[in-house]
Image 1 (tube, rainbow, N blue to C red):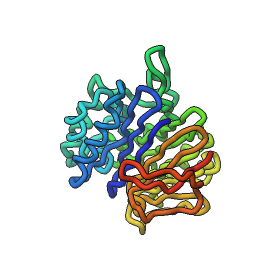
Image 2 (tube, rainbow, N blue to C red):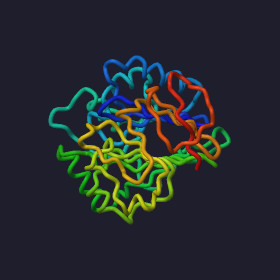
Image 3 (cartoon, rainbow, N blue to C red):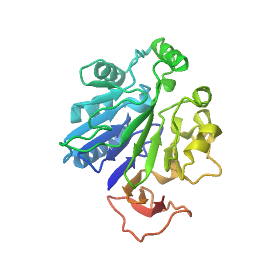
Amino acid sequence: MSIVKSYGIGNGDMYYIRHNSDNFTIIDCSLPDDRIGSILADLTTQSKDKSITRFISTHPDQDHISGLVELDDHLHIPNFYCVANQAIKEYPTDDFMRYVELRDSSKAYYLHKGCSRRWMNESSEERGSSGINILWPDTSDPDFQSALEDAAAGMTPNNISPVIRYSVQNGPSMVWMGDLETDFMEKIAGKVNITKTNILFAPHHGRTSGKVPDIWLKELDPDLVVIGEAPSEYLDYYRGYNIITQNSSGDVLFEATTGKAHIYVGDHTYNVDYLNDDGLDHRDGLYYIGSLYI
């Protein structure tokens, strides 16, 4: 069994994966002032029995690195994963400066399409794989190189985001895309090895500007799309797909096990009609809303 949690923290992204191996992964960071203490305590509790902790930064926009100073000071991030880049900011925050420090340090590992690393996606006699694979970027691709140049010129770094796929043996698979924008995804369609995926975390917080193109959705064929907390007037609700909207649900926790994912949310009034009821109790202050069979 593994646990994946998506924090409902407003206009930002932050997730963790408590793997069914000796690994713990945090994806992005967005710590609102009123939840810094509780989220850091949660991460400490969930990772304390894991020997390998990694932080994956999809890209250095403030809503994906907010609170990085506090997170690093608290956890002393030992493994920092990002796409190799030279992004700059006209008005750099303390969090961005910490990002640059970690990005350019010996702690950094640079993600690219098909990369392999213990124990991200390679096992050893010592411990098992995390089940994380990187589907994008192809660092030689001209469209990606153009996105890198934009970031290095102080423009948006959205399109340097990697495509990350996590899969559990005999269990659900999940995909993250940072803040990739629709027009960029259309440009690179056919260059990304997209396969059937059970749970998709909609890029760009679910915004219309980051709507996953139909050509991608056909290949992903998601059983569930998690839509982030952008303002509702900017959201695309992925009509025709089962969705969870974090504007309403709050935190979402997936308990991934053989053939299914049990789903819990922060708001006790939130419900959907497409899940199976396995009659589970609530857990960790979250409310069971049903199980997604795959």
